Image (cartoon, rainbow, N blue to C red):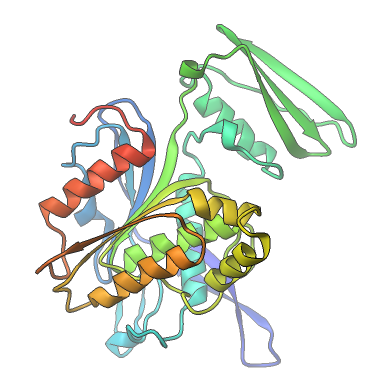
Length: 339
């Protein structure tokens, strides 16, 4: 699958299209009731297969894991030698420029992978496309047993409903835009919402955190609307891109101006983030993980957990993954502790 994002060319400031070809995607199906779907992103030079094998062993039977493979591209830090990478990186330093095009393309790929998942339709917001809403309803209402057809009458309100088992779903449209969804006669335990999340290791963690930032701000770095409704982000041995510019600065500005009342600030306040980093990491220094945590907190994220591990290098250990499992169960409200 390929994505093309706009980039500014040198001649006359015109925009050009830069295409990214993503590799194979590996999927780990839930062994129990499907309650969450998480896209997990590998590190530089790796692929989705290795992490899918590890994630399959975790005692999280209610999670579906989607493990894509990054595009193969020339990497500046390797002197232009090609490698699988979510974005280009020249050096790991606070002053290093961010590859915004690559980050946006990878964040869009994550959102696209989540677009077919049965989302919690009660969280749909004004402006969602009709196709997205219909897919969400078809997938989530009463455990995939209901199909809701959609019709639109321009410049007028239309309530279209389908009876289904013990409940009724009414959807309200106006001029091809979804303004609200009314739930009538459906009990709470009859809904089957699936929460969506993103996580990763190293460069994959950086991309996951960038995706979380796009969700909270409501748009990509290039200004296009961000479509996915995320519920959590996890970053292992990674860092926060665009910490000194772009979306994080915008989010901090919104938070300061609106004093936590605006939509972006509100999403940041309630969006849970888990960061884990080893103090012995000689690839992505521990200080980057620590500063990323502090940067998120200072820009309005109020549910950030940072875990430090003495002696841990640039890899994961069972103890770290145990904490990831416990955190996901808590934040996503997962049932059970083992398969």
